[in-house]
Every structure is written in structure tokens, then in C-alpha cells.
Length: 305
Length: 199
Image 1: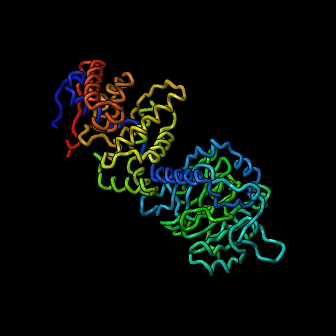
Image 2: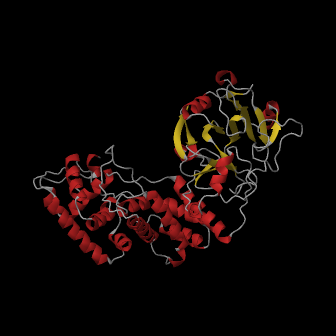
Image 3: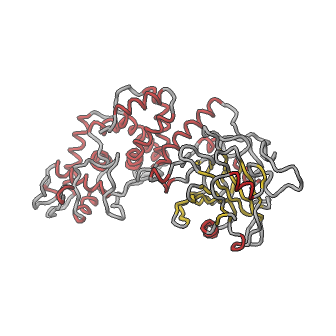
């Protein structure tokens, strides 16, 4: 179409007024496409409703909560609220390849909404199949963390990715307890730091910080996180890498099997979490720290040894 | 307009058979225009994404009633629009959506929800005048113009979403444009130009 000559909008014929409206539409403040997570959320919600409809027992047993009281409160959410799941998810996006880094961290699924119904009475039973070493006293986190208690060297030898540590000297941490879950492809390494003067404890666990590390895979989420108000998910940048800060309330975290289902005995309540990627490795840090401090620690992690 | 109707058909067939993953792909394909539809239908009240998600779930449950071979988008968007307007009514809100120009003032990237490609770039002064007029229009008029020109939906799609005959949309659109024209000041010198004018 050639440029219109002079004349008022009022004098435009319908087709040109329609064009002007279409041009206006291009710059209007309308909601953006909600992104990859939205479609996944719809799918998850449908699947969850289908599961609820047939009343199959949820394949979930709740481990002792790091933040015990919150779990009970979540369990007794009104049914209507449970049903009204705003399930949004970020799936193992293969984020970089898909250009969707802002939406996800590889290997992590974030679900806005309550987790599948938990079986009452199992909230304080501790770990299931995974356990600490038989020697006593039990190492910090042995009843909470998935995998076997190992030495840092054992963990290093067992996984191909470089394990990083929150720098103890810089942040006043003690050396962490190390756990290795070999059932996760590539291995899941969890470092557990004891609470201290500068590291508030998560609940009454005695744990100040948990750092999980695994090779995030494009096609398969490993960790699922269930988030609902007032918990919020915020984009953060860690040394220029996109990540998520999940805070504001308790949220559940679980480990997912190859089919995306929650693996038994792995659902528990989590505190503030930071999710980010470092090379091929996905990291999840859990603590009661502020966002700024958590990000600072995340930015300073360094290879072990 | 539908983009890949054959693929839609296949996805719908699978979704009807219970393949939620196929439905997820359909959601991804239409979620952008759906959330914008919800926004217009709800007059900005409430969360358009919430309403859209609810509508997508309801649409999945209603897939059995979807006629094979029919265009999916308007069928879906009608559910979305109904959900959004029902929520607005249930909330007792009589909110009036005040459309605004995005802060950047820049065109959105083209996508499934982009207005018709022939949509012209509008000069800022003309745009503001037009927007003010649109914002004073009654809701029924604004909705038909919004669906048609802001979301780039066809007359047939708009008819299906509004639940009326194609002829009704044509006449409503004509009347809305006439009323819009009367709301515009005279004497403006529009500088509307086609997108390719610089090229």
C-alpha cells in the first residue's frame, strides 16, 4: 500500500482505518506469549487431574521435611485449593539450544501448584531406600538427602562432571558432607553444609546449606519443584548465567524418574532455592539465606580440589 | 490463518485419544493468541493467564465435542473468551480495560498472535489519537475491533468466538468502525505507512 496522503483519520475509509487499527495493535501493551512453561503447566495439570479422578494412590511418600511444620500445613490445604492447581513448569529445556534459558534450568521442572497428595503419616519417617552409612553417628543430612554418604574423593571419581564447592574460607563454612545418588543418570552429588553463625539452619535440621549438582539433560528433568503462592520464582543472574530464585514460602522438591514421575521417597519441603547452570552442570542451592547472599555464594563456587 | 492445519488435525486426533503431550503442543501453538484473547475478553480484569490455563483444560475435556477437520483456533478461543468473561462477571468486576501502548512502543515480534501482516506502522501522534478513541468505545464495539485488528483474527474466527453469525460480525464491525470514526477528531494528518515502505 502506498503512503496515505493527507486527510484525517476520521476521513479514512473502513479498510484504511482497519489498517491503522492493526498498526496500533502492534504496539499495544497486550500479554506476551506465556512461554514454554505454560503449555507444560496445562499438561501437568491435566495429568494430575486425571490421576486424581481415578483416585490412584499417589506414588509419593513424603520424607521428613526440612521445614517440618510447613509440610503439614500444605497437606491440609483446602481441597479446592489443591484442585485449583496453577501448574506451571519449566522442563528440562535444553535451554540454551532452545533459546529458552530464561525459562528453565536443565534438568529441573518447576511446578506452580501443590504436589500430588501426600500419604498422611509418612511425613516424619525419614529416608526410604537411600540411607546413610551404617556407622554412627549419622552424618549431617543422612536422613534427608537422597543418595549414599561418600567422601568427596569418591564422589569425584564417580561422576564425570566437575564437582564445585561453596568456598568455605570465603563464607565461613565447614567442609560439607557429601552424598552421591548413582540412580540419577550421571550421578547426583549433594553437598550438605552445617549451619553456623553466618549460615542459619533450615528448620531444625542443623543444615545451613544444601548444594546439589548433576548433569542437566535436555530431555529429562531430574528435580521437580512444586511451587504455589506465596512462593515466587524470580529470574536471577549468576555470573551472567540465567537462574531462578525460588523463595517467599515453602515449596516441595522431588526427584523425578525417567518418565517424569516423582520417585518414591523423594518429596520434601524446601526452603529458599537457587537454581542455575554452570557449564553442563545444573546446580540447586537450598538455604535460608537472602537472595543476594545466595547469589554471591553461587557466583563464587569453585571446583573441588 | 491456522498455520499448519494438517498438523493440528493430527495433534487433535492424538489428544482425543488421550495423548496429553500432543495437546501440550497444541497449547504451545495457540497460547499466545489465547492469553491475548482472554485479556481482551476479561477487560483486563484478573489474570489472563489463569483464565487461559483454565480454558485450555476445559477445552481438553471438551475435545470429544470438537468436530474433526474444523479449525481449532476459533473453537479454542471461544472457550478462552467465555472463561475470561465468566471470571470477570463472577468477580463482580465492571472493570474497563484501558488499552495502552507498550512502554517500548516497539512492535511486537510477529508470531501466532501478531495482527495481520499488512498492518501498518502508525505514527505516534496518530496512534495516540486512535487509542484514546478506542478506549472510549463501548465494550461490544471494542471487542469486535480488538479481535479483528489487534489480534488479527478473521471475521469467521471472530464470529465463532463471539458466538454469532458471520454476517453479524461484518455488520458489527462496520458499525464499530463508523462509531470509532465519529469519535476521532477531524484534521489529523495521518502518516500511516506500510511496513515495507522503507525496504
